[in-house]
Image (cartoon, rainbow, N blue to C red):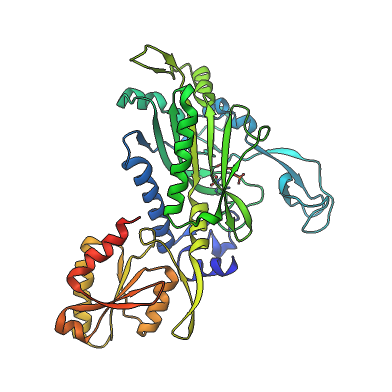
Length: 431
Ligand code: ATP
């Protein structure tokens, strides 16, 4: 894990938040390459679950919402973790994360458990009374529920249909830890999929298969994913079925994403508290009811971490040790790097620039690199997971062919410049 964190920093993927001031626990900043990786994951999810389907509607709701939303959803009361603190060093720990009966840091005595609400509070407007109280949302889902009627009125969708949203969420986690796994500011990708109450089981099964297939498509191996049926008693009272999909992180098998059947809990609560008509009229049968909902809920940062963990490899190539990221081409931050064989030969540089500009028109995520020798350039691209390196050499000037080098095997082949776009785009479209 330390190796991965240091690679992420050195190569400009992810930095500790507020690092020059000693860091702010539970926050991470994404640099150019980390951002590209994260955007590719989000784009792939959006394409699969929204753009490629006819039954999904996108939404981007405000992070700040009326405090009433959180009263209705139960978060104001219940979004809490039991917490103990050390009477000696004052550190706080989540009850489900402590081992033994004394402080793991200093051996001091621990207090009794008490509830700690994980929502960040803030004030909206100038007044500092309770009417101005607002929260940073701890999940994106409630933005979907409060817009249910707007979506119905605007698009008149027929059940089953879903509303999907990608956005930031905030939780004042007691013990942020394990790099991107447990943080205080993170992104979620959530779908609320609305169904007729009698049909939830088949839709749950469909979403289970589709969500797992998508996680595999971004490069997570089957054997690292574990579907855990949350047993009776551990699920929310309104849920008849919940699956936590766990992943083998370097620090253990832990949750990656969740799939929960939430019944009509959220819509009914908002219907009751707001007075809005949050029901659905089936025009064919005349039946009016509050739809039930199935919720696949992904954390983007946990996916970034799982993708990095799955892709990291060390091997020996040409008698030299190397580290590389075996990222799926459509997820890799850089798709291809174009090199002139020698930096000080203007004809090569000019030709390489030409190839670069032409290719960039069809594949924007490519880079030009003429720093250091070719071996160093390969290592650098391997470490950031670039699937292809394309070298322009003296033969190129004669016959318009280039060397196409494949990241995972180091194999090289001669390819016509004219074929590059087709070759590279073909692999990208596999994702
Ligand atoms: P955990 O038990 O690990 O705290 P949770 O069950 O509270 O997670 P949910 O409320 O179901 O998580 O949130 C849905 C998804 O959001 C999680 O599966 C995870 O991917 C992501 N997520 C939740 N909390 C965090 C966090 N503090 N940091 C990063 N991602 C998170």
